Structures are given as C-alpha cells and as structure tokens.
Length: 93
Image (cartoon, rainbow, N blue to C red; front, side, top):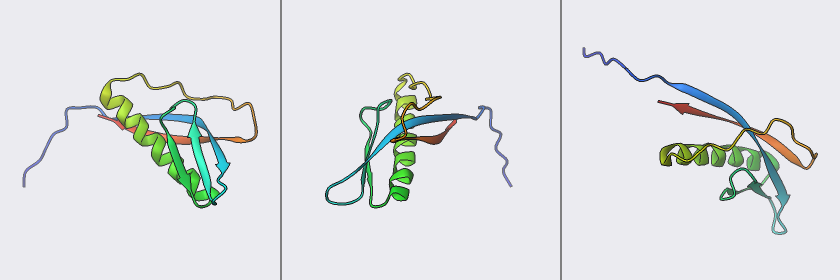
C-alpha cells in the first residue's frame, strides 16, 4: 500500500457577507451581494435562496483566490434588517 505525504498546509477562511434577498415578480427570490458585484443567484424559496447564496459566495471566493484577487473584507455588522449574513467556508491548500 502506497502512502502519500502532504507537504502543504490547509487553512479555512471563515467569513460572512451581507446578501440582499428580493422577491421576484415571477416567484422565488433574487440574491445579490455588494461585496461580490458579479454574484447573482436565485432560489424558489427563501431557504433555497440562502443555500444558493452560500454556494455562489463560496464559488466567488474560490475564483478570487485562484485568480490572485484580493478577498473582500468580511461583513461584521449588518445595518438593516432586510439583509442577511451568509457564512461561507473556503479551504486553502
């Protein structure tokens, strides 16, 4: 049996970003995040929209990391009740 040694360190980024969930006229919720202007997502229910937001944020973080772009600062204090914090994880190698 072959054993592999890992020489790289894996760290995890814990961050949270404020997302805006807006009801769509056709149904469901559209999701945007000011920290990632390119992020646009959607869910049929608020619960699904939250899950889709988390996935989209994690993908944005992965792309930013892979392209060497600076990661937007984590939001620490939302100022309004119509926005929600969406926590994400990103494993680093």
